[in-house]
Length: 168
Image (tube, rainbow, N blue to C red; front, side):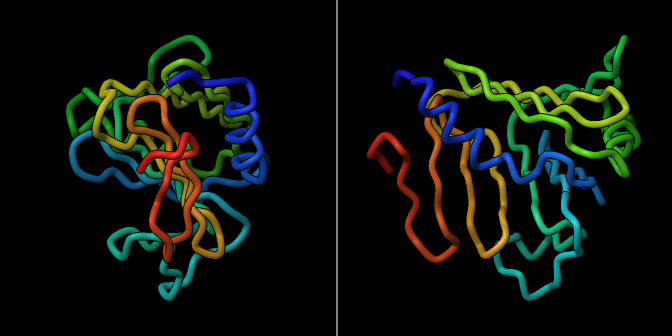
């Protein structure tokens, strides 16, 4: 599918409320997955927008489900392919930073999350057919899904998901 400038703008509008918000916690999940908790307040356990296994601290959750690399100003800090013992200490460098920008790039919806302290988490999808690349859990049970491939969708926890190109 062709990603138009209006698609990038729609995604940008969806993530805009995160700019300037603090990172409260980062959790390493299975394989290459991360969850980053962001927001001004802590999430309570009755917030059903987040999976029960990752109730955490931010009012927003960013679930990364594809390959990624965390970079500093002059070096690579850690990547999803590194040894497990290196990943958690590396991504913990994001705690107490603030999101400065989120940029999505066509055609594959690669995404750069830039944080204060000159840290950039670069998400680069490696699957084009089946797997979700990343998901934003927003307040009130809303979600933004990026992937599979170069598709994206907006959904609520209570409604079936349909991508913005009419599939799903």
